[in-house]
Image (cartoon, rainbow, N blue to C red; front, top):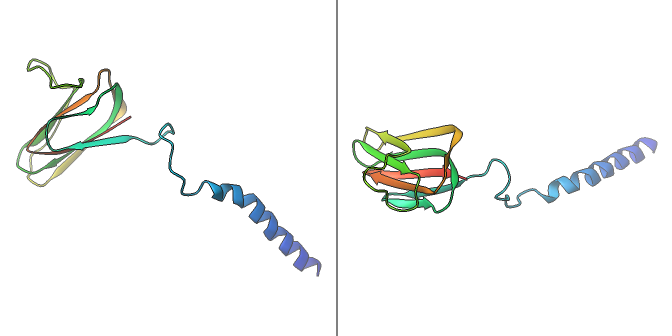
Length: 125
């Protein structure tokens, strides 16, 4: 009888301790928590972020040979003499290339993607 009582008591303690941990399971993540980033995708020239950000990665998906994306530190179409902050390209049609920046690149104005013959995904925060 004592063993049965101690087993039931242990199960109740485990359930009481585990219930607060289960309360947060499946909750939507907060955007200010570490580890979460925004992602913007485009297949044409477009402003990805309209405010300062840190860029974590760029992925290019090629729809033709020699596809590339130029990333500029601006929110509008860059002037022709501007140099891109990052250029990522893929030479093979239907191939992809991902470049991760560690530490992330600081974009002081915003993020503008100039895409040629493909699509791009920019991860930022």
